[in-house]
Image (cartoon, rainbow, N blue to C red; front, top):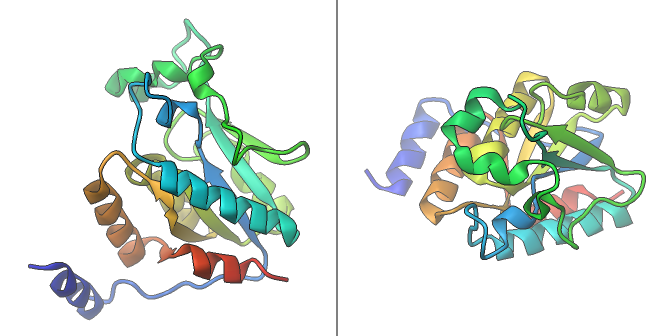
Length: 208
């Protein structure tokens, strides 16, 4: 079954109904850090174009007065933080505190006063104050960018829906180790858990 056939089959089954944006969107940037861009990192991935698109999204949101939230992964050395996730993916050791691979890059990077959510599992909601912070700020929609599409982006978008926030995944501004993983996960997210849109559509939402 080809991609077009899959899409038509999903529509017939009732999948893929658009959620649309609410009244109070924010941009959520997932784990864009040196670990995915440094040639010496075990997590290196071909994500330069996605990172550049995420920077465009962030700068546009700031210019138009919309909130921008960043996430990062961090573990204290010698602890069991991350639990079975770290056992399943041992290369997550690059996110131990003190390792520069866990650092933000130059662009996009949080500015003073912007929220940074530190997490230890794939979803930015799991074990963090993200949902409470968004509710306090009256945010109802998340334009999600970052790394990686099949991992933390997918987990965060799914949890956003389950917490009552509208997840809009910006396809151009997300990246993965393999385009097949990227495309398959965007397809499934759009069918069941989120709206997947391109950068131009995302920028149009972020205009007051």
